[in-house]
Length: 541
Image 1 (cartoon, one colour):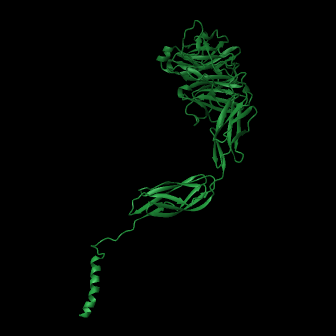
Image 2: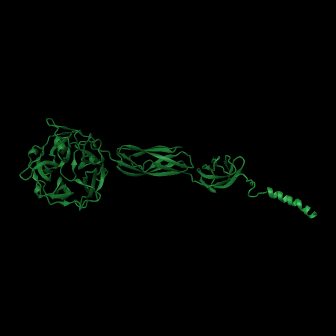
Image 3: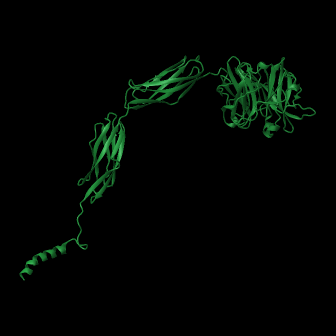
């Protein structure tokens, strides 16, 4: 009995603990509140003068307070900005450095707190060195000027670790060119201006632009292109005759149109080769011989060149071979003769090319002109392209190289019927190209170049329907002559002499063209238009 009583207090204590303890059906064990953070990367790398960021993820246990971030251990020249997580689960730290911050690795501590609970994480900051420098860039790598003109180019300066005043200089300028400068100083933009004299030689000059702040330097290349000023008149007006040559038929040729004339003086008379169109729309060629004053033009009897399968001729004397050439289409072909007044003696056709070159999408209206070194074949494509091919003058008519496009425009603004001339007293060249106006009216625009193999550009105010080289808006008909045509179409300037240089006198320009009655032009298909030939004389010098 005593033994049982001695055991009773221990039993009761056990029972009490068992009844109050953590069985599955009893109370919960308390959980400690906290926050924890994790940085997206243990290392942030930033170059001097730059910024970099890291995200901070927040894990919360039993707390919802706003979390703020801070960073300790930042070196001189580095600061931090924070996007605090607040009540959310993520934030961001951005470290900003100055150019003067010392390169190296720095151990930092990211700290987060909601005012009650805190957490921290290690972060390594790596600052990399940046070499101080300046760099420059031109708004254009090429500056193109005509002789006597000035032009400017903008210079942009990029600075790395430097704020000194920047000055500019230009080396390589040719004789006749000088430069002035708007220095960037402490800014990031400047300007150079190149001034030229009228005597500067044409050409392309490689220049070097240099910039310096006294400690650091930079350079950039600039190509200076000097082109000639056109010495050829840049606007024109004309007077015109009525039709001086019309279609003539014979027993075997029912001709409705004469067109595409090419005329040269030979033995004091005009030798003219032209296209013909018969009543079936078939093209051919004819020869005419006309007095120098055109007095017998209307009565000249044509000789039809039925044995040559071509049209749109050009006739000229090729002095190096003491031989006459007749150039014509549809593919570029030629025949030769010892006497242009003997139209029956032209040789059978020969081709300039074995086949149409792949560089040519279409070709029409071929014209040959030579300088002292090369002969050039120019032509159009009825598509806005103006082409050129060349061969050494000693190889003519063989060896023409692959044609290239020397100028282009919209289809009707550079259509067909091209002619090219050397302009006496200028050392320059003139090209006429036929275009189509708003109602289909034909007119000529003009291009010019300082060399046959050079760059061709529009000549002054001569490149539109309202301001043409030759067209209805700048032609006045002679007294007593009706306005018999509004189209001034395929033909050409009358050259001085008759040789391969195709030279013209800019003070005595005359243009033999094809025209047609406006009603016939608007009502007939192109092949049925009754073209006639008229003569225009320039009145603008």
